[in-house]
Image (cartoon, rainbow, N blue to C red; front, top):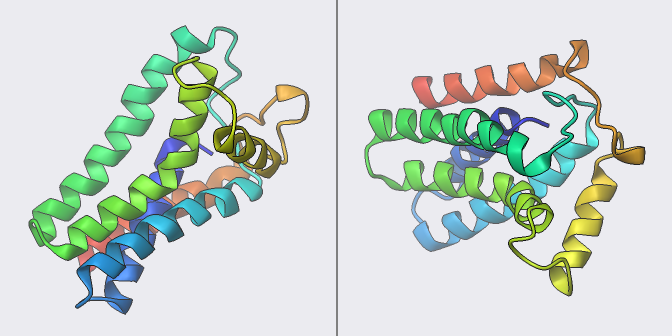
Length: 164
């Protein structure tokens, strides 16, 4: 799944958690982050495509980090801040997004050799790779018609932030 999709799902999680726990700051942040993490694995189980197949991970991942990950986070967090200010709702959205991105961030750090793939990280990485049902032989699916649900998640998340 592309980062925009995970970011959108994390934003949806944050809005939802805020509505269930509006007066419990510490609890809502922990729940938003935790549900965000779970949402990542669940979203990876749904058929989805990626931008392409990387031949040189270290070189090709940089534009993806800037234009997919950082831009998506900036858009959703910026829009949240603009609409809600520095409130619990914005922080719940931020924590939902953070949780939803954490497995891919760990993945990137492991594959770029910035952190070792051992202990708990090895278990998490193995589970994360297992949720990528389409990654057999390390060949992810390319973006296609099945990714309408990723676009739908982005639109729903934007509407939830703008209309709430």
